[in-house]
Amino acid sequence: MSLATYTVSLPPETADRLEALAAARGIGAEDAIVAAIAESLDAWETHAADLADEGRDDLPWLNKP
Image (cartoon, rainbow, N blue to C red; front, top):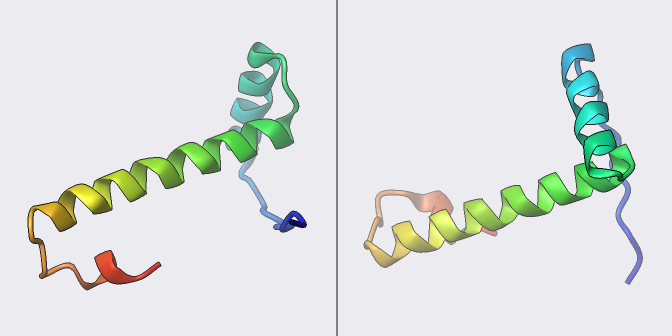
């Protein structure tokens, strides 16, 4: 599987925070971004599954990928 490439523009404060976090973890900024996106997706998918289990049919975005 080939990797998807995205380009993002970060405010300076966010870029500084990213660089500091990456340095503290001993990884590059790109690896920190990949980890943050994966963790965010996992959290949202878990949240959506919990809402679906509760029968929240009033939230149409639950059934969209």
